[in-house]
Length: 187
Image (cartoon, rainbow, N blue to C red; front, side, top):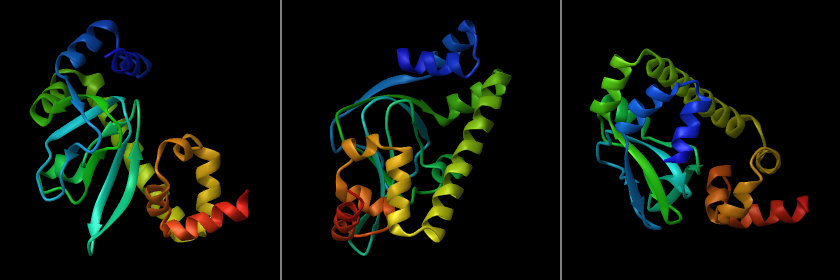
């Protein structure tokens, strides 16, 4: 809970607002391989990662495609499912034993209504998500696989230590074999 409290503090919430927000979250542990969101099911929850690493993935013709990874101080959400209460298009799985703080949509909506700074925080979070999605889409369409890998090394080098290479290859839009060739060329 300390990481959630620190995150809220850094986001501008005062002590009483932090207590109110935190009171709506509950702690959940997930073992390695456990699902936070399952594709095809409605997800009306959002979580803050205290500890652990998570993989966002979907299935394409029996092949698992990793679309994103999240770690400590990140949020887990199937945005379309959460916002529209439609079945999730991707799953979110714990890659390590994890601790998350979860809030359901009714409590989240109530916080937005009762606490104006929380609504401002939410809009900022949505803007960050939209920017992240746009950046990822742009990079996938305009950069070569080698350029995407070099960008990953520069901007998120910790992922090279934490995320299995076959997931990184999927995020980069290449096969694990192609990623191995890229890594060999760049070393």
